[in-house]
Amino acid sequence: MAESSVTTRQDGRAFGEVYDRGYQHYTGPRLGRAHAFRALTGYSMKRALGSKKRWTAKVVPVILYVSVALLVIIPLGIEAFIDSAEVLEYWDFFSVAWLILGVFVATIAPEMLCGDRREKTLILYFSRPITRLDYLLSKLLATGLLTLTITLVPLAIFWLGRQLLDDSPVSAMKDHAGDLWRILVVSVLVSAYLGALGLVVSAFTGRKAIAVGVIIVAFLFASALAGVLQESIGSDAQQKWFALISPAQTIDDFSGGVFGNPQIDSTFGEPLSAWIYGAVMIAVVLICCAIMYWRYVPED
Amino acid sequence: MSQAVADTSARVPAGVVADPVIETVDLIKRFGSFTALNQIDLSIPRGAIGLLGPNGAGKTTLIRILLGLAKPTSGTAEVLGFNAFSQGIQIRERVGYMPEAECLPSNATAADFVGHMAEMSGLPKTEARQRAADVLYQVGLNEERYRLIKGFSTGMKQRVKLAQSIVHDPSLVFLDEPTAGLDPPGRDSMLELVDRIHNMMGMTVVLSSHILEDIERVCDYVVIINEGQLVLAQPIGGTPEGGAALSIQIDGDAQAFIARLNTLGIADARLRDRMMGLPEIVIRSPSDKAYDAVRDTAVELDVPLVSMTGRTRSLEDLYLQAVGAEALDAEMYGGV
Image (cartoon, rainbow over all chains, first blue to last red; front, side, top):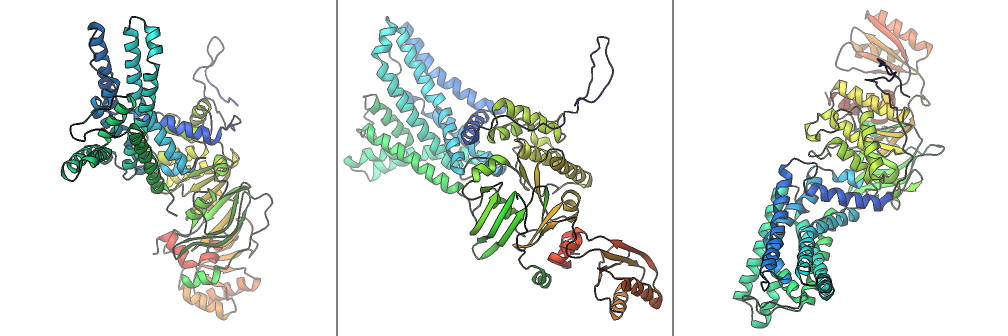
């Protein structure tokens, strides 16, 4: 197969040799639909973080990761030097980090869907062994997993740091294992909830800048709307239900409930049960999936 | 045009093809009240298949149905033995598709994207990367494969589209207007690649195009669709419906020449004026009497006979028979 030739070196090996590689049929394994699903998920995550793109695409994710890292490292540092200090509690994390979470989701969700729609790459994906539902679930999974890196990972590090600061780290870990499970549950649900909200907005436009703007404005507007409704038409019994309109308040109240420390908000009063917030978040994820599926269902 | 279509668009029954790669029976696709495909019966053999028809004839709709991407209104379709409606996943594992429209991500390198498409077709990561490099080499993008696609010319983008369609080594590949937007050298090059895919790589190619020359150059079997109707499906080299033709070029009044031929009993003489050069008159299935009539007419009308050539029945003849001369002119000369 290697035709060619050229100058032969003194050691008998050719250099500058040109090979006609011909065409080799592929005889290896074909891993099918599940592999395609995983490949799409992994590729989407890497692209959303700016992998194999110019450095400018990596700036915002890096800033957000550094910010959230500082958010848990600084309190840990303070607690390390001041024994009685408790600067940050698990249930405080989501209210403190809300801005970072919102911007992170507004950054990555449009990267998941808008480019494929705008550059008409969808037709190439759909000519592969996946369904439209596979495509959407893969994008939702990719968004959720990336959001977990900014919710679960810092919280887990914070939990681990706290136990290591204890006089008896091993027994502290055993004693506080329940907190780790709560961190996992809250982080997974919050990531799915925020990811679904970000994706459903992104599904309606091919322009990333528009999607980013709409997601951020929607988060802010929802919080403002919840406050206005509470002030204007809510009775005492209804006030706390308006918190469900605001993603920030919903997440805050849900995490407080799960960690057994419900926070009485000055605007919305006593929060609802964590189960209600959890159920609403799951319902929102399902509704967003249904809307996205409708959006991506074939027009013919 | 409508008259020509009415004359020639009768349904063609499925031919008997051993081991067909594509088979459709009574395939109908409607969009509201518009019928995009009407009772398509097809049996397509392996090889290089030309899917020919004017713009809007239903070629892309047919491809989308065969890929399992669109549901037909009624009828059945099988690709590589798989049902196109219920086994779309299995079909798409084994089939490649190069769409007509721009569909590449601008902010990715060719190697990265084609490798990703290989993974999406089920190839493991390492093999996908290797295949992407090999296939990009095959389509002539070896050096450029690490450049961002947004810096590519139209011809290079077409090659990337072609590469992603064959990177998983499919048995069958659909190429939808692969020469669209290319200049003549780019078009030549693309057709050479398509020919290589069929002859060297052994894939069955379905080349959808509205350009006769592309199909004639690469394909050995043609399917002609017009206004949603299947009007012809047969080997290009074969001349089952007609035999040779006689082509005459004269330097004079072609209409008067044809009228005189008609009076001499040559009814099948037709002007094929391409708006360039001398008029060409074609006589289908010429008998010995036709040659004598041409000679006598030239003498009687005192018209110089520039050339008189026997022609085999070409794809153009088949297309003319199928969709009519007006449609051909519209396709080849933009309706001039």
